[in-house]
Length: 193
Image (cartoon, rainbow, N blue to C red; front, side, top):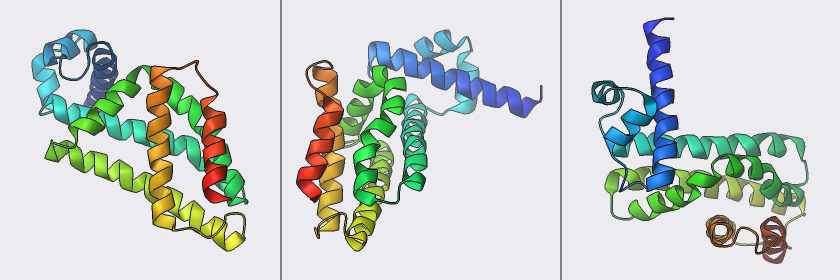
């Protein structure tokens, strides 16, 4: 195994350990020692790869967003009707959210922390921009196609992002309380048709 591959393996171990520790204890209560212990590495190895717990968390958050984006991409490419595409997204995103389910509360905690932390705010803003841009593109295409009524594209993309976050919170508070995917679809139809 090359030194580069060992470095990648160590980073992956650190990320997996951090996700587990953060999920158990929360971001603020978790320490570098906890992460190192879980990953089976020294503090020196940790600091070789990450300058802080914050930087580690930002990379973890970026990876979560990438997982969600990857789960959406095949659906986008295979569906020529843009309204149907939007309606199929909740199902497409479900596996990604299931994989990170225990970490959703942490994800939301970080979004809130991003309000006061400039470094984390950059990551939060980047994910927000990715999602609203993605929704805007679909809405614009749907309007051109005629499957979506004429709406303020920017406003609707922000509403869709808000719905996504809102339903995540509701799913955390009451996971078995409703058909959350059905409610997302109903909300999309109410907004765009």
